[in-house]
Length: 118
Image (cartoon, rainbow, N blue to C red; front, side, top):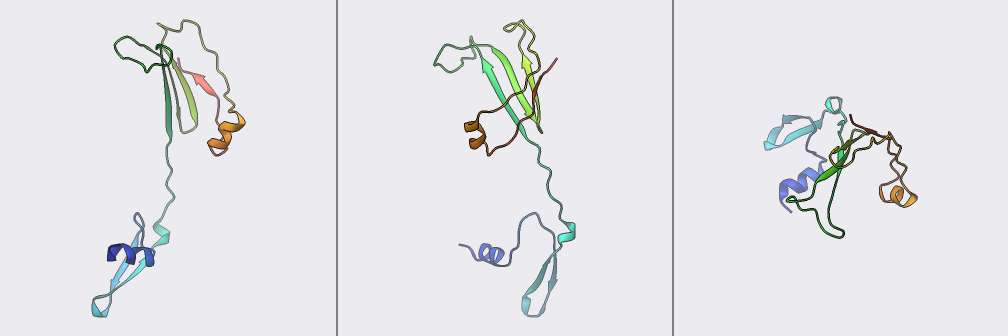
C-alpha cells in the first residue's frame, strides 16, 4: 500500500472533507478537520424499466420490436409512460406493493404509488 494511503487511513483524512493545515517545524503539518463546513449530501435517485414487444424468451430487437411502456421513479415519485400505438386503453393510477421476498432483497424499502403520465 502506498505511504500516502496508509497515512490518510491512519490519520482519518477523507476525500470531500475540509481541513485546516498548519505547517510545523521539521517539515510536518498539523491537520484539523473542519466539521462545521461539512454537510450531508442529498442524493437523487433515478430508476427505470423499459418494456418492449418481443418474441418469447428472446431479447428485444430494435429492427422490429417496439417500446410499449417505460416506468420510472425519480426521488420516490413514480411515473408510467405508455405507447398509445401499442396500448390503447387508459391505465389507471395504481399502487405497487412488493412481495415479502422483494422487500427482503431490496432491504425493506417502501415504494410509493406509480402515476400514469399524461
